Length: 476
Image (cartoon, rainbow, N blue to C red; front, side, top):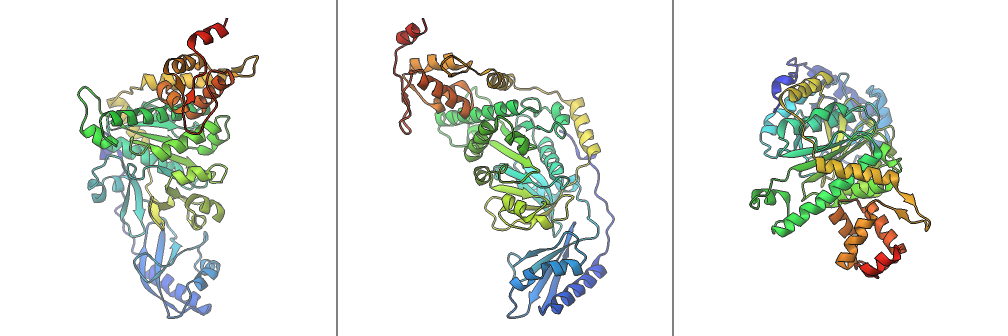
């Protein structure tokens, strides 16, 4: 395992902001009073990126009046990116007004990763996220999420957050605990992680291979559930705690997609979107988790179905309130200050947490990678690589025959399988052939057009309409 010595220590320099906070509180009260809003600042919390002023409103003052003058408050308080209003602050009767600090205090990766809060976390998939407005380290458990959507404008801190997630796993998990699939269509951020022993396959950069990797993960999910069924368990932790004789421990699998938008404009969009949704909806108990990031939080990238299945979300600074709503179903991210300032919405929470994300410098990442390269070796899963390569080849080589039926390299194997079983279904092909939903669907369509199996009849398996000898004769 890498150690704390590879990471930079936090600065011990403490800046006394009490006098500045008092002056800003007075200015805020005067600004509100100029609009006929009577309120007193009951408490001030100076966080890493913003200061929260907790307002005690006079009786009869409507909170909506503060929202109506938010732009004027921002102007008077010299809040270039605007202010954020939290009404009320959870657990209180106060209204919170968050105003950016003139200087952002860096939250180092080390101080969160080795905090007392992290030491209490037993799950190896606990992630060092950052610090909240009170300075408390925020730890998120990827196993409980169980999937995460990250979005924000370019330069807002999204890539640094992904690095924090990957390196939290590297520090806390052995390759036996967790394997990684990294998908980086931009070919910029994740290439340096190719030396990690945690990698299941080399970093994926091509959309067709990304589609193949997701299809493999979906097939692996199905295979794991079959193992659970055979051993009368319902989730990965129970299975690993009661391993059948001769069986190997199943590692958790984390799939990181650094730029979803690049995949959603590729020819493999349909397959990718389907597989993401299936994994997000079903893979939690199988120990397969998604971290999906994009700098284009538009509805054509973060579709309604994808968002519905990725319930834990992080919004960094966005270019508009519309983008903020696309990510976390509310305005607010457009008024963040950038540089790691985020709104973190864990699954099940009604209101987001404002967090200053950990900052992990490039030289720290390089130190970690150099240490790992010196002390470990990569061991990719050859069977997974073979399935993905085969999937990529089939997507490029599919061609039309004289009857305009797409010929898949696996079509003959699929025909042989259904002739032997006497029935056919998409899920059966997915499970038995380790392929994705879209590809299995195309093979089923081809066999239907060829008259080998019946047309769909609700959720029932397709009937096989011809015998093996009839099929062999038809080929002559």
